Length: 274
Image 1 (cartoon, rainbow, N blue to C red):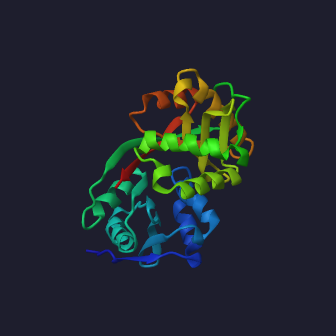
Image 2 (tube, rainbow, N blue to C red):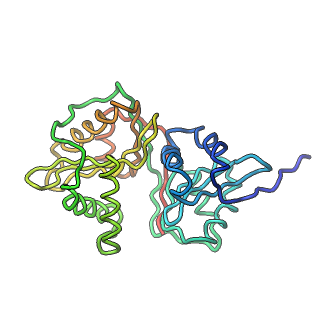
Image 3 (cartoon, rainbow, N blue to C red):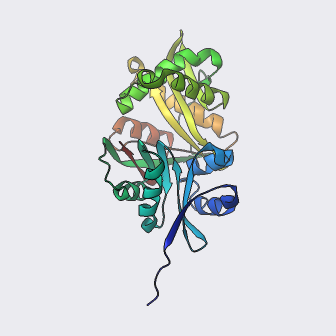
């Protein structure tokens, strides 16, 4: 009976770029974040890979935020131990099977503060967009930074239960500024108030990933999110043929908005917060 070779886990670097790209390119939508980060180079984060002999079979990217792709679930345990030796992840997010395998492999076990499972991953192809884009949505500028910081922090408190301005206000400011400078942030303003905003978390030539879709509470129920997101997708479709996003299964209102815009289910994500 043939026996399987032991898995070897190592930190990945530039010499592994070809193998890493070949692995994560198997699922370009599911792995858009990893593929986008790889385009930035290996200085953008800590990459760990599991090898069977010389074949790369699984990968995780992360430090406090961990994003795994573990098609070979037997690799979860050695990858978990490599991660925990260098840091204490605060969040694991990505394909459901990979996330849960990694979470369950941490030793000693790490109790989850919150588990969001399932999170449908949805995609919208160019040509399938439904709805009328708002002409008031535009790329954010440095002049919008202060208002954007406040709106994004409100969303973070609403979604995560944590005030990022109380935790590390300078880091939060730099995060929002970096999104503006990347041209990854869109905003809809009215009289210096943010009605709607959203950002990108990943960009590749094939697909982008949208995050942080937020409508100010007093403007909800008026079609703002649908018109705002339609505008962002229309803008992205000038360069990229597909948009993606993932959403909590219990967020029925958001799911309804995405469905009406033409988004279709593509995969299932999960998020574990510690």
